[in-house]
Length: 399
Image 1 (tube, rainbow, N blue to C red):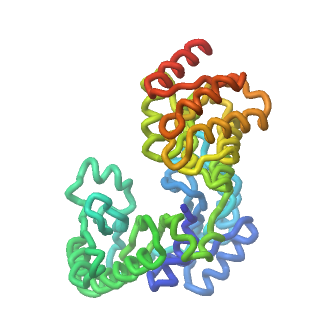
Image 2: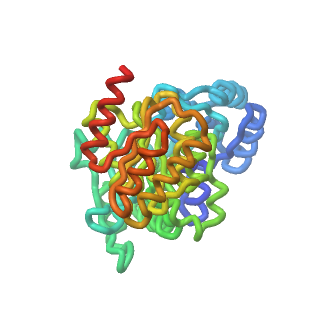
């Protein structure tokens, strides 16, 4: 589950991670009051107005602006709140900004120049352990750094049996070129950050940039945190952090029906039981000349209710020209799935797009018979190549 920057910073602060302080608001008037309050709390005279959306690259898209007085706070907040912010992560349609974070200016003058770093923590599935990645190239797109100067990315793998060791935190701080007070502060920062990552059951922390201020403080200027959906039963307070306005409406509807759904840009809707089979189905759609319109995993216990919910979600996508249902009957019997398809079809009413149903496994032949004798505009297949051929035939007839 993605959360906003201000929510991520609240979590980090609760674990002792120093952050760029800020107050989230949703109107220009509130922004001015927040700036006054922030000035009293931190002494800051300049302010940063930051759009709160679930996407990176906000600064390049005009969603992060410096305000040097309260009048500018009002004007820049007015410009950002309500805008359709387009970044390289939002796609061409962009995302509407409903809130802004009024943050303190942490690039104040001092004995030395401030310096930006990059730190992230995530699971390395290949090595079955967490990895801390760090770089001196903070503030930049880490993908570009990885592509053009991979030697500037430092990696430290953490043995899950013993956790982060002090020598590893010191090793990372040294590798970033820090010494003296700044080195000590970075070690504290990394320790607190890793503790927060583990105890919140997160799937990713990305702090970009991590700032060394001119007086050698280390703090998080930005924070991207992904919380593991599967751990919500241990963190019930995190459920309230979900912002449905930031998610695709069809994906929200799917999650409410316990369906794993991701909207794509193609023309063939697919409904499958099992993530691996779903990805294979998407491949076969492309090989047949189509483009998958979604990823939809109905799970191992597919029934009439889940099939109907899946149908309704897929049909709300106007780009869908055909639907391929690909079910392997292991846990669930194919004849039950077939009856579910027929029942869902009748409950929904007239469906204007052709449906191909491929059933394989327990009672597959019985399932195919039910589909063929239903009298509905549904085509059955047993082999995957037959389903692929039918998809190709249907798309050709539409064109």
